[in-house]
Amino acid sequence: MTETLSPTDVLRVRVHALGLTATSWARGEPEASGAERIAGVARRMLAVQGQDWRSARWALGVRAPGSAIADVEAAFAERRIVRSWPMRGTVHVVAAEDIGWMQGATNHRVLAGAPKRRAFLGMSDAVLERLVEVSLVALDAAGTAGLERDALAEAWTEAGIDWQSNWRYHVIWWICQNGMATFGPIGPSGEPLLVRAEHWITAPRQYSGDDALRELAVRYARCRGPFRVNDFAWWTGLTVAEARAGLVAARDAGELAEARARDASGDPVSGAAGRLWVDPGSLGSAVSEARLPEWTLLAAFDEHLLGYTDRTAQLDQQHFDRIVPGRNGMFLPTVLRKGRVVATWKRLRTKTGGLEIASFPDTGIDAPALAPLSRDWADFHGVETGGISVVQPADAG
Image (cartoon, rainbow, N blue to C red; front, side, top):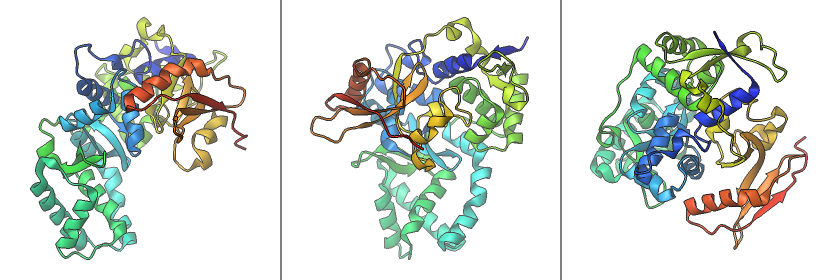
């Protein structure tokens, strides 16, 4: 019999799958080091949004309670996790062993547009080839110490290449997207340095073709909870047909199950919107009865929202513009109450520090209840806790 899930069921299973409940997988083994726990989070999450470096660190840390920034840095230094472009042309933090096969499964989608981008930049294929050649020589010379982006660009200049400033991002993206390089150890600037992927990643996992699509489907389901095929297709950057092929293969192998969605009144949701895919193991009583945390403090770009196209279980659509002001693609840090977004927040740039919570209209924010979360955030970052202030924003219009 096909399982049916209400919006509350979807929310509960998603929050648990995302590592945000007290009984979550993200707590890790007690004897594990901080770096091991951080790497375990990255591995379980498959990929964590990483374009905002500061936010990416907290996205990992909030799922590994008691960890600190030093643990994130150690996970990079120990070659457990890397920062690169696994899919969608978007930077993520990924377990080191997973980046290669993920790119192999999704590269055909993002690389197809590269020639058009180079034409827009005025970069010929011959110049790109020369830039790549010099880059790899420089990275080989640097070894596991890695290179800052500026140092890599200096190597181009020293090689006599007449390059333009707006080419740098494309070249670095190109060598990383094609698996020639990745961002590994943390440098003096506090951000990961470029290294040769083949020297840095010592035990890559091997998946290709249909096996890679199936693995993507299984891993996405385990760390995202119930979803629709369009969620999976968007997140991976695959076509809907490719996404569906991966889902069906996983289902036929007994690694995925289908479910049906019910609306808030209990009626079945018709059509494609009512068809859900879910990890069979997430439907047990231990998960379905797991208590949602009263309050949660999440990073900007957290997978709680970025992991899906349909976010209605986690967020009232009328508040979307408060999360992404002007719909500019910049997702603000969020405050959750029992798994749903009820506010955004930011760190106060004052001498005493602290957090400012921008509440949604008609939402009561319990500042004292948020104080422990503020301390967790401050401890992770090694800063003073400061106080919490709550403001009521003007209507987003």
